[in-house]
Image (cartoon, rainbow, N blue to C red; front, side):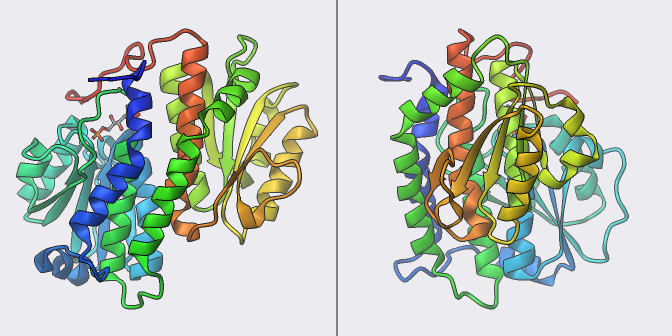
Length: 355
Ligand code: M6R
């Protein structure tokens, strides 16, 4: 039931802080120790490489999660689009372990991969929102995302649940737990609440930059993990507002895409990584010099006068959890402003059960 909401998507965006709390209650004890079965952790520990397999938004959650596995847990991790892995399997490491990410647990492309790796005798873990779904049943292990039913075709809370659960897994595998993850995730839930309470801001930005019929294309740029959120932000905008959008690593602009920048082209820069903040700003100014209409979404400690939206500071690898929210709201208000059916975009299905 949508309740007071005009569309499920907005309801699901608003539910994200609650989803995070649900995950924390399930996966931490009161002291902040992780509650994940020893068998799962032992298998990942014993593996020499983790392969994350997913599609669409779940793939983008995998790209963010891989950084957590590598940088926190020191575990080599590769992320693959399931429809690609299914028919062009890379050379596998000696002791691979597979993690499937899927909101629905029914995505045909991912099921095809799971079937193949089951036949080869490899072990796997599915993180899914739908218990008893095919990917849940057929993997060696499964953990629930606890996001509650996601009805809108555009996936929002499942992404946040996936990145949160990946962070908990990576933390459990890490030798060095300097960060208090439970505390950090609680702070992030508070930060997300503040962003979703600020809807008017994003409606105004969308109305000014993305809703006008003269806007045919838009770009999201970022470096490091922000470049993966740029992919997700662009996908969300494309699928529900039909604006041609591209997300990519900011340093790539000058290698070709800069040619597409025209007077008024919206370019949204995601800036949460201290190491590269200055470089992203440099890349952004290359676009404004060619007439782009810039908008920055920036962590507080990296913010400068004239920035668009200021996010609270969080651990840089967890920044996707907060920076993705403004991009979800920008997509929502663009779709709404263009008079489209936000929840049911043309040509798309919620669960993609064909290859
Ligand atoms: O159910 P899954 O997470 O396996 O679905 C994967 C994609 O089909 C899905 O994330 C899709 O990209 C969304 N519509 C994006 O909002």
